[in-house]
Image 1 (cartoon, helix red, strand yellow):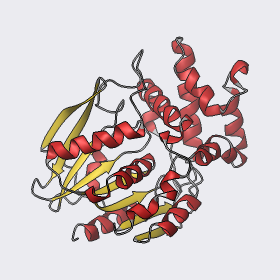
Image 2 (cartoon, rainbow, N blue to C red):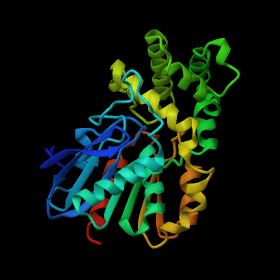
Image 3 (cartoon, rainbow, N blue to C red):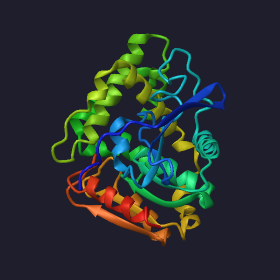
Image 4 (cartoon, helix red, strand yellow):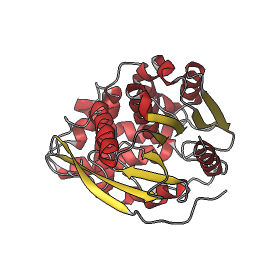
Length: 317
């Protein structure tokens, strides 16, 4: 089953969520359909037009939004002097609730990918009555252990690329974790320093997601503004372990019991090892775990059809 045909939103807006932030949102599909919410990855990627196509437009009233600092939301994290202090997981969870209330949604089905799974889990554990079902692909919880893995330990699989990544850090910052050093570089007053750090960060991102068969470098990383925005938000959230207690999302997974869930994860996903999805599945008794034998952290031949079949199933709940 392929994605649905391209579709344009029937309603869009900018929601003032306070702290100087306005988030872009859009509704697609059937205005009287079953509400669904898409949570993008990154943090910082923003939504793409292709992500509208996960949802059957006859069945779903699909809501997509660009999280603080990204996409069409204002201000962008790449802007000079951008303050990230009011950009935390708690802020994003509150933004989702404001958006739900604005749109008059009682509860919705959530589709989250990569970082969107962390945010989706945090939202659902805080507001379980507002979540009807969840589809989570490329599962992460953004724990300190996961950040340590993705910024250092996975270098054992990509030693040449990791050495290039680590040696971009100037000597006076090498006594701190790489994610902290990069966050400092990405906030440097010198544009050259910021751009060099953003480029190196995104090159490392492209390296560790490359095990998916047929992987190609991400064309979005050719855009200097996108590189800086993406790298600033990723390092901001990762250095603070998503502003959550360690293993909080695994520890509190029982709060989701009763909510149908599908966890979809690739065997070759070295960016976010399968163990996280496995531990979450063991504690979330109404979830099921799908392990894709042909996929890394970017999908595979079976990923898209499985997401669409699962959304079709949950759309009948």
